[in-house]
Image (spheres, rainbow, N blue to C red):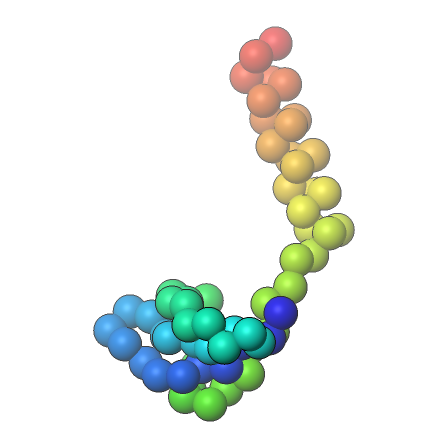
Length: 64
């Protein structure tokens, strides 16, 4: 999903989505972002799988 930074507020950017909805995006997620920038938001399936395995390993240690 691509969003466009519409404006800057105190701790977040107001972004416009592809279907013209507005949403708040914490500034910390877009360091150096500026009004008019296009931000691409994606899900990384490989990193997601790695994190799930990591969490499962921690839970196995905790509950064994």
